[in-house]
Length: 245
Image (tube, rainbow, N blue to C red):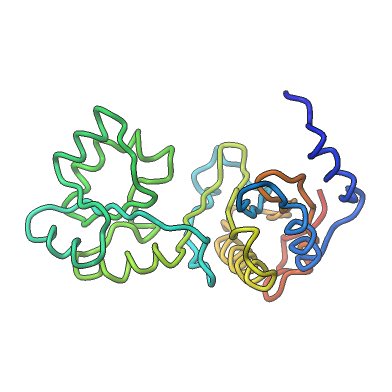
């Protein structure tokens, strides 16, 4: 593991690792520490009390961020035939049929940020699932990314406005972006609250005891701040959630 640089060590001195920060405190401090030469991304990292080896303890959903994510989202739609016209009208940046699917399969072409598919295309899209899946780009009915052609306009609009998909990794953690350092504090607070609420709502029934074991906020280049989960709004103190390690 590489040694921390001078800038990171200086930022570490601003963090009290023996305390938990309220959401508002964390947002203010993280914004002040995001002083790199680019607009850093603000992130939240959840440590969950799930066993990811069990299918009934998987966590996966989407959330529509109230203030977006501060970036342009390139949307690809898997469609063919008459649905191609509807996909173009919906605002797709790329409409993918056999040619694009072949390019993804052979060249690992992934010049897009989000993908939708009409149901009739899923048999073909499944052939590139091993490429799309690990990158969070595989359309899935459970996350609202497999939609009827008539609903493509709404789905594209939501993705471009900041609909975020999240899922647990193999260690039971969830990592999400909540905006940019250039966002004002209130926008970051409201985006963070939206993510927290969405995660709380889908607690697997098979999970017993503490669900959210630890929550950390940081920017791209800053150390993490441990959050007091009870400082979140509605749903923050739900049974099975804790700020304890």
